[in-house]
Image (cartoon, rainbow, N blue to C red; front, top):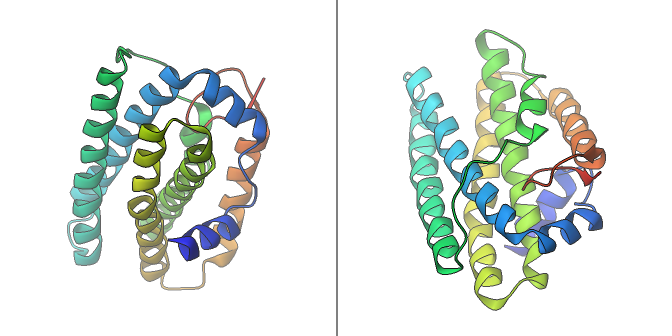
Length: 201
């Protein structure tokens, strides 16, 4: 797992800001609620790819596995919330995922490639944040977040492998463009704290 985290920290162009960690520790109820939402959205993204690209065997296998794991994580987060008396309620989405999706090229293989790269970025950032938060959390939540590192790291690798496989050409330039867009979202101020938000405004 150490090697995967090192790879992820190299892949991402910046670390999570200390100010975000401080906000997460102060708003653990929002952290858990938005974490649950993120797991649902990750499962939904995988399912959308399953329905849209039915002719790609490798994608079907990886996304089916990913969707099951993300829904299991969702259930686990909801159970932790229940144990802590945190009410699952509606909260607005962060600008992170939508900000990344603004860069997706429309149509054909370019769209699939971009969606897969963005999937890798989101999973990588999730993994990095779990690792950054764990040392500051209580034993139960720290253990849970550490338990997610392996699967989230594998999801990042699966998305990136599929993107390179289906592109049919060298896409490092495109990966670098989207990495830069991700960095800007993480390093610019956000008015609301969320699991993937930037620096607290």
